[in-house]
Length: 156
Image 1 (cartoon, rainbow, N blue to C red):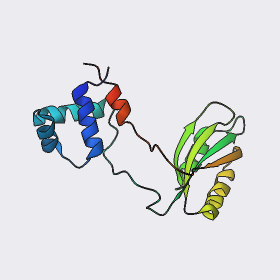
Image 2: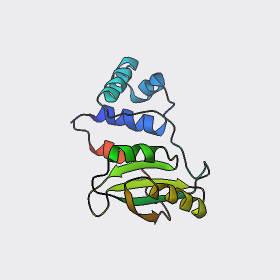
Image 3: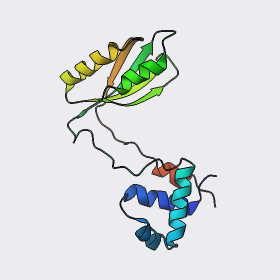
């Protein structure tokens, strides 16, 4: 396993309080400051911890409408060029290549339903996109989370 119980506790602590600092984390976890720093460095180096940035609430930022857009692309289209064009649309906050009927699943935010139409219009103008299907999020009973997975992963 790539992490142990101390790593799990460390990740959970920094996820809950990203500004805690190494010294305070070491005090709370009951380990040396150097141990905390070494663990954080290792977890970053192996790609388990990918950042310490702030979580941003898109609704509070002025984008209360969240959608998932399924995109079908034309056979033979260059997905790297399409990805660059999708990346240029600020309201596209996530994109995944998927299996099934569609080829891409894109998470999009918008200021309103009318604004969503503007964003979808931008999406369908991207060369290679043949069809879209939009799913509007009504509620998010389980927001993005990884701590339960982190806590279930460690082996002692």
